[in-house]
Image (cartoon, rainbow, N blue to C red; front, side, top):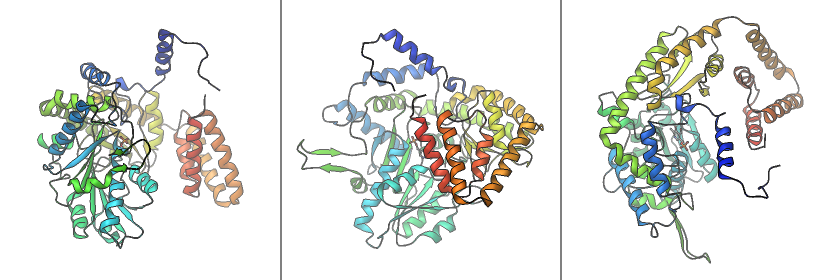
Length: 480
Ligand SMILES: Cc1ncc(COP(=O)(O)O)c(C=O)c1O
């Protein structure tokens, strides 16, 4: 097991080892990763790095010690609120990312409901099945129930089903602009109206779209309303480290009024260390992301964001047309911005096999389910590789169409496992799962994942799957 070295190291050696380790990572500079990296160019990176390192040591925990950080955060929040049609009452904070913004919004809803909705004795938040797992995590952390409603055929929230699910325990409804899996914007106006009629809160999760949809709309593409110009929207989240192209660790959470934001905050007044106020979840807050976010918003300005969005949208339209032109695969629904999903409409094509083939060309795409599809979040970095992606996708689909012994073997394996899971006693299934977990925990994820996803699809209950993934998480923090 590793331990802190007994002797001092050399800077050159240490950085060399780190560079070597990085060589194995996905080649994001070549646009091979989707949804993990948002990148423009070296010039912007250098600005972000300069701003970040200038505030490398400072701490956002105490803005009175660092008026500079207070200025940056306040201005970033105000610029975001203006972009999202908030008025001067809108109050908010910067957080470390979408998840922290959502945790803040859900915690706020819980505490607000304690004061305003006495009938909600077992509080619930209501969201479409495509809503981000950060809400489920927040509900889990804060003792609430997350109620998920299946989406419509176009993969957007089902307004009538959500209306029908509201009850006296519902404290907040959620819609996404857009939802991550398929990139479609929920009918926020209709959903927020239901929330308003029921005098409950409504959160628009625009973590992905907050810094892109307004520019997409300005460029003339159709984008439905999703922000504070809808009266029922009471809070929003928007990530700077996504389509604002800021450094990682930056998001905003916004509330329609300061009174509502009050429920987010925490103060300890009796601690022996003195009075301890904390607006968000984190204690110590790195200043680098705050400074870099302020820098990029001011550097690009509306002009820069419009130019970038124009390039991205043109590339995305080309990518989507390219996908739809390949027989056997298609883009799901009609996404508003640059997030979309690719599915197969031909039963002889397993889309996860297509992902495995794409992996050979270095493309890293998330496998999604319900329906089975692959995820693409295209940003500026992908504009240059749009043609290459389509060409590789076409080759991958053609490869998957070709019959092969390996494919038949994996189909048979899945069919047999499925059959066994149905007939074997429970403890046998558990034994098989343990062996499978040991395999994953020991060796990490296999090169070809389609068979593994196929096997997972056959699991008799989702509890087993949870255990399996927990084993995998355990394995990921073990030394190789
Ligand atoms: C719609 C949506 N909400 C929330 C999040 C969570 O953001 P983060 O990964 O920054 O915590 C994401 C991340 O992709 C997202 O797409």
